[in-house]
Image 1 (cartoon, rainbow, N blue to C red):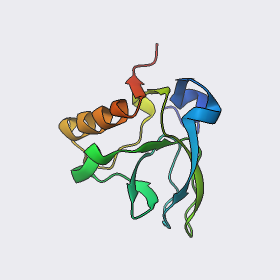
Image 2: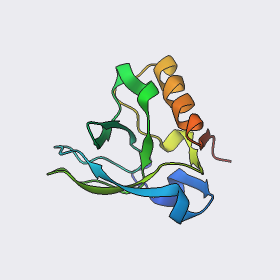
Image 3: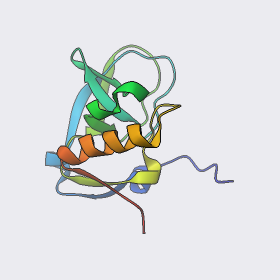
Length: 117
């Protein structure tokens, strides 16, 4: 069993340019820590993990761990990158169809989802 904590190079396979692909966005207040790779949606100006029922609203991928607490800035991939499919964090209970809808939403933003080689 692999217990290694994920790092950015596990998730981010390629980005066009870090100054263009990344954004600092407000991460909504939360209790659990959000791990690297959490798929986010914009909700009322803040970003939070997508829900299983709304994966098609995926807007970004978190590229740094976000500890629980008040609303705070976090860095995300917003465009122009390739991310590893097996490192994306979807909500518990998300079906393959819901995940495919979320991946399609990311692809529409220029965030390509691929298998790691």
